[in-house]
Image 1 (cartoon, rainbow, N blue to C red):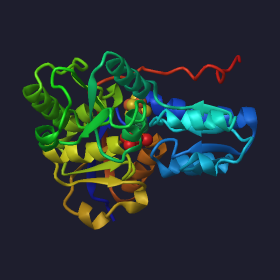
Image 2: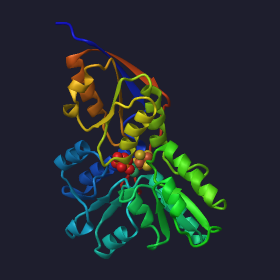
Image 3: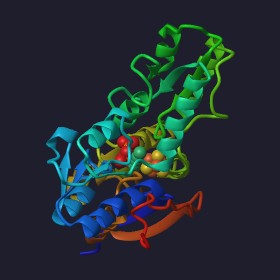
Image 4: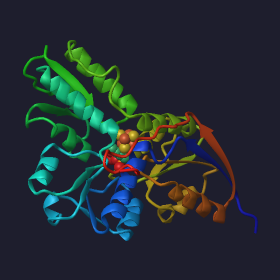
Length: 316
Ligand code: 0CM
Ligand code: SF4
């Protein structure tokens, strides 16, 4: 029996970013250097496949430092941690390695600089996300105010409109953030901040790439996890740009093949924490059912890498 045809549009860039690559490498190098178990506070990146792979090598994932026994090394996840966490590790004389993405650390330093200059800070981000908890926790409680929407901008109570700055989470929707920043500038014309926002190159590039395939695809699959902010934003961006039939899947086994009945062109992308092997798994699952043709749609070429932290680099 001949298989039906399926055109696959592969968004590029997609999948791992430099910060995720570095964070995973940090856990692997720590395992080699210190032996198992190495503890990791929070999922190193928001992906079960990655977490399970590291667990198999001897990593133990915990949510809080008090779950780490004395004398064992602990790695902090790519999303960043409040200042209280390294302080607590130091007070317990725990060996820790910070895998915070350098682009998240950059936002931490920006917030500290504004605070040192006497400004109150507004963070644009999603409440409860670990990156938001980490960025707010760079400064004393109450110094950083969180806004999630234009509505929040209308109601936020600031101490002095002339002494304000904003910073953002790195994995937001670029288009939604433009609106929120515009609302902030309209209400507080003197607000200081980055030239645009603090959304990282990987988030920006993956959103641009999914936009390029959205209008041409009957359905889009985004490989990623529900707790992955950048992956969830890809699902939303695809829906807003012409493909309402856009879905998050963690593995090929989650694909609803009944929903694929009328799909002639399928778009595929992956969040910054989703390994390429999961994309390949989806392509293979499609190949079993369809006669597939793959077209890669490239909107940017990335060649960014980040060095390992001092103390973990190969020669040390
Ligand atoms: O921040 P987000 O939820 O998108 O995290 P992630 O682990 O899915 O992606 C990589 C990062 C960071 C910071
Ligand atoms: Fe860093 Fe961006 Fe990757 Fe997060 S998504 S780890 S901020 S490069």
